[in-house]
Image (cartoon, rainbow, N blue to C red; front, side, top):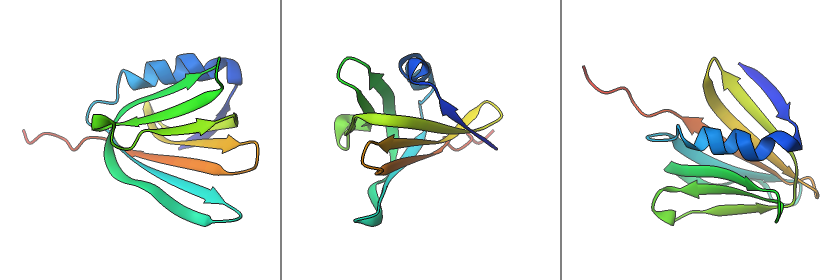
Length: 112
């Protein structure tokens, strides 16, 4: 597995592209901060999309049926962990050092 930092100029296009391949992918969102420690914000749920809006400087994690959409205001760094052509995790860091870790797991293989 390889982790890499995305340049800010890549964020919008990268996540627009990733969002096209999220059917059946589950995500779990954790928040890590010095004040609160490590807390799970959203348990494993199907993802609808990941996006970055440069105009408002907001990263959005959209879960299926809109029940857990999560906005991360003013991100300063984004890291992605990839294995082959699969995205395994996304880490978003805010100005205050708070980190949001989105872990991904693919849809189970269909019985064949």
